Image 1: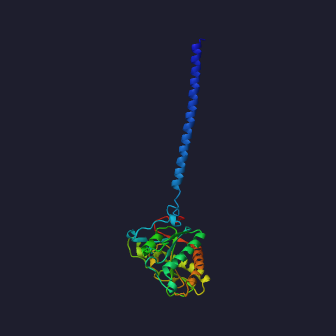
Image 2: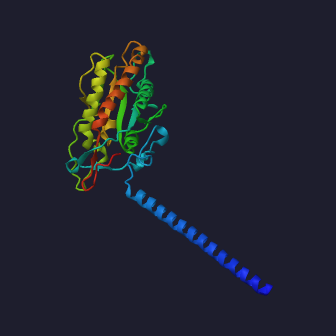
Length: 302
């Protein structure tokens, strides 16, 4: 057979083999691409079908670095929650944030007593220790102030209302209270709003939470009574301004009195107050619930 013909046949066989090999390679690559695309679509579908937890970092706040920024006073919402008569309460296990409010600050010194004691300064000392005790229990703590500033009442409430899965605790030193004791307060019952929209005004935001605040207050008060003789055994009622506009379980803790003979009398109470608040909130956590507007599915764990 002529060499020229043999060479052509070899080239033809080589071309056929190359074509087959390239075809297999192409089909393998195509198959891999199709499998990869299918897997990606399955992952996307799964992620879209899984409900996002309201307590994820996108919706919650942690120690100050993850805290949601409260709206300015001018942007404070004029409605906070559905009217109690239209509200359902769904059990949730998502209590993980405590908004801690050292009262007063700035030019508002609060109560003043002997030895130059100023309420606005003393509550910062208590707040720092309470924060440590809460964080040791796994809570995220959001402070309304850490220095000598004086946020407005609405700013303090807005900081709490911006969180999801939170309780609010404001700290005070009494002006004429019984030295060496500590007392917990909640606001009086707030009548339902007559607003036909089903929303309640900003200054009645605490309305749906009064019952929960009583539960939280009783638990914290019981812990305080164990540590400070003469303290009440149950929560008391008072029109504390910070609480009325807070849409979350909210309490005020009033400590001893600025009329003590020495500042050291207050300083000795710091560890016990911190432990009592932290333990009381831990005890409240299993019963934590949130109001859910009618027509929503509710029940999602924060």
